[in-house]
Image (cartoon, rainbow, N blue to C red; front, top):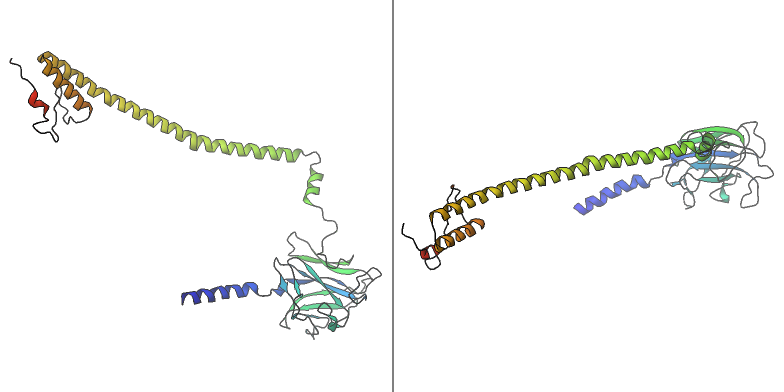
Length: 307
């Protein structure tokens, strides 16, 4: 059941993603009356033509749409949807010859063009007009009317007429200047670019220094200071038992004399330094018995001297 639900969910998501978005298409250019250098179709004829442009960033299938010059007959010239070639790539164009004989192929329209007419691109529902372009009545032969984008992303277009025909090529303004050329005009010697480059490098170094000083260097210094304080505390703590041990030794030597006394002191010091002495009484060292039997108890062998 879960697998079936996931399959249905993916199908529901994929259907709208794969659907044709014909509303992204526009009529980008029209040549009504061909000139001497006009485009020749596959049959060797010179006809007027209609250029359709895909403004989107995805491929659009335009098969099933319609072209017409009569707003009362929106299905006048259908574009066959059975042909797999009736699709336009992102930001690409396709040219349809207005020969008046739509049966010649998928890229031939059943309408003819003349100055003063308006051409309509109709959606595949046969009712919705996607776009239209009017042909000026004074358009000379061999010239075209075209829509040119006025913004960098190609969302807004304005109509220019007459223009030099450019079938199959996305329209652009003839006086466009690249960013590199504009930069060259503003900064012929490269001073602006040099200053900007040095500033970027300097800022990057400043950021790196800031990060190193406030995050790495300060942490290292704090850690070193903490370690030094710990060493100092350990050293101070280790000096206190040494004083007590020295006092205990001095007192034992003062009160007792003989080999047994020195042995006891040595054993006491050994146990004290091995952390088996448990009390902290002043001038006294107590030996704690841990797992000591009568056979291994060294205190049983100590000889008491008479006072």
